[in-house]
Length: 631
Image 1 (spheres, one colour):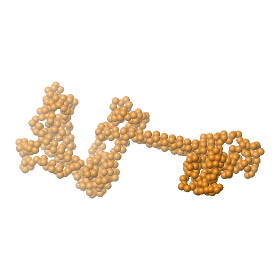
Image 2 (tube, rainbow, N blue to C red):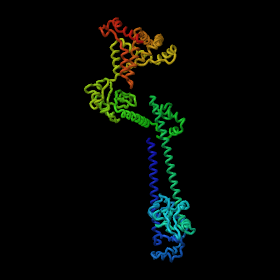
Image 3 (cartoon, rainbow, N blue to C red):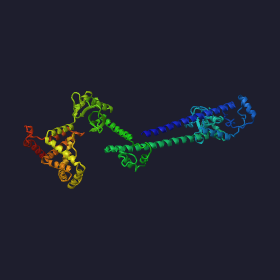
Image 4 (cartoon, rainbow, N blue to C red):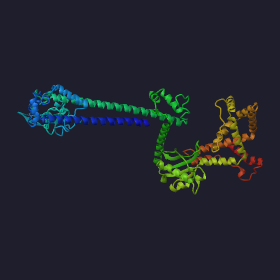
């Protein structure tokens, strides 16, 4: 993206320099033209005079042949008595070559400049070269008396003489190229005078009017300069258009390339796969998922291949660029979420802190809101939590809400955290501090967390259950060894076929997730028995000893507890998923929970924990009977 900005800046600087150079060239050419006028006025002792309408082509001092040195000295000594009809001093060049050389010199400097700041003529015709010939079309042109009849300007003359421009205020015509492109030494003509030409009777005469003016040398020179001026402008416009098209092409290519990179990064993020490799040099065997996917796309897209093979930092594949694009994508998602929250007005927040891989505390924020007929729970942000006390966490939550522009004082109607004292304290906890600034923010202890606490405390109060899960963890550790793991998979394929099942590790914080461990152990228990028996008969002493010890503990009591917890944890897992669902229906959750309430006589009388038979008779057997009836 920085490279793109540099390209645009370079093009902008180029246009600025081009404009400045053109302005300086035009100013210099104008100054030189004015100097030539002043020099000629000093030489001839006069400014160019207007020609008479009846004699439109008087001899010009710049084009007449000289007669001798006496006349030249007379002009220098008596400039006031200078006669325009008298011959000028001898000139070394012919009139045609002089005019051609003047035009060439002017074109070499830039474009031919007019000899004065404002050309003569009324205000309703062109005032600069940029205006072009003014050719108004009237329904009826005014008529004037010429001879024995009235005559008027004819519109079709515009097509026959494209250099004409008509003044409505003067009812006369002017020559556009002569007014703006005449050479400094060109004689004055009625077509570039203040009054203009209006003798419509002689307009199309052979030796007068438009045709005679077209044959004049100074008009031809002006038309030639006008034509060259238009060609220069067309080339300049064509060059600018070419530059703009090239720039637009470059911008489109950059957009396609950056969009491809963003799509690859989005793919890796959604699929939860790593982006960068250990070594990303050209000789690396595994440069990472991000570059590998881009290389695969480049094989089918020439544009991507061209950019991937570019030199320097034009490839936009560095870690900094990746982070910037990911942050931009994250901001786009956050903007959409905030927009939906603001449209729904009221919302709730769910927050929890945890440690990342670098052992830094991070607080995650989730917003819950009603939008478009459904309840949505959207992750909003991760924030580093430097202070873990109630005051620090409260400020962190409020700062996050203010950062995203959410009105929490009147629109925050709920807050959900875990049951830690720092979060749920009635006097100085986070929920209490938030309610001081947002009075409608009702605190709710996370029900899934409550269920997890209930299961954890219940299991810890039963010794047999604690020993059961300890044995389950030891079985996981033993079966996860490389040798045993391979042997266990081979035996499962031999006995059951299909994909073998893993024995997952037990989670200390999410007890409901232990259901998968109990389910896999119950379904693959014969295979586990066979693995332990075969390894127990091998010569490897340590491994065989461990296998025999674990096999001895897989007795009937273990099987009974395994069946019990497989049933209990299946329902608790279902209930936990329901409590964590964004579209939670509390009434349905309560009904589902009531279906699995087990009534036992242990609540009616005291049971001696040391009396195993009494425990089985009053607690264990009723639980098994109730589960058997409902299954």
